[in-house]
Length: 265
Length: 258
Image 1 (cartoon, rainbow over the protein chains, first blue to last red):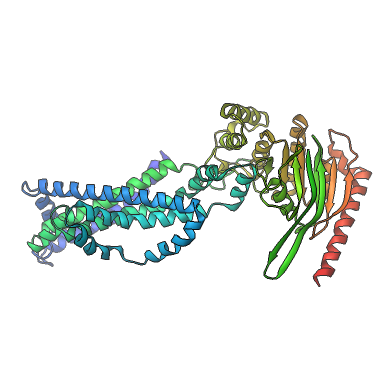
Image 2: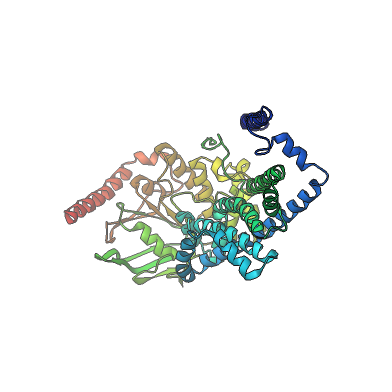
């Protein structure tokens, strides 16, 4: 009950501000402060999106973007997770690869897009590879950081009582890296939608990114705005999903206001 | 039970070699409670590292229950300075995990943990995560975890160092009462002379680095120990004897340092 009221009190202020912004936008167009062929009003965007000749296509493209995002996100984060675990368990290999991994963080991965298209054509493969690459790094780096950052006194204790390398990994290092892993996953979630739409713009046949490019080329701002809104919604939904999973998995953290409220000794 | 024979440990770095332990020998008998007292920086942590198998001694040997265990982990139950409970496991889950790592069957580990939590009055916290427990309660769980582990030697590394004076005395009394019910061989490291006198059968006084044994005292008080012991004349006398050793050691360290 308390929790629900708490949530509500956190939700309504930003919702109100958002509502006001949308109303301002609508008003600006309605009162002709902006020409409606330059920026369509929110109502027109919604109307255009639900038009019978647009909605089915919009949904088809949304499905394509969702699929690409899901494949890329799943593949990239899985690869990042596995490589981080491997590098952690093989310190010798890690010494060789880790510096390169950090360096490669500075390469803007989207520049690989045209190269991928050149090498692999216009199918799903180059796009999926690009999204995977983008998702791979934040997860791998965050996870490695988490594994290395394990509390030294806990590690000492676990070793002293006889834990081997595997027990240490499963029972201590992996659980203590979970928090970092989820930070990496959240970054990867927003990157994945971004890079998926970018990849679709390179070969604009399928997906919201492609649809957006075609709409702008055909000068249909309502459709471009509609696809932009859908892309944002996908991004938010994926982020929210990760946050929900995180809350379900990491239950041991002291809640707000609960930290420091100890039982008497 | 535990035999440490002529153990030396030195660390080398760019500035040269530093002897931390020199030719150190000590024993702990079956069911005996032995304390090590020494000034800070006397290599007590290193000694525990060597006994627990985390560190290889430069020379010498460690034997536990007659078996050579030098440089091998897993032969001791351990209670570190910080409670070191895994935050993502419940209180009972923490005890259970340590026991299963030491080879206890899972179901037995679970039932032992629950039975003893009940016995020490923490049954209602069995399913709670460690962060809801106070420092003193966490240390109780940490002690229980070491006590229930199947290894026959317990190493206690300044277990009450982080607690306030009153809680500390309370915990010493509590520890003794539990230990009397389940006598294990114990090696305790502590800063507190009174804690050592109150708890142990024998006290080993170490000097500052390199650590050598300055004195070995057999504590003459019968068990179970009474709280009034702390005002006993012999208690006072032994306390000042150990205190003199430590003070001399500190003076010497000061001279060497200047």
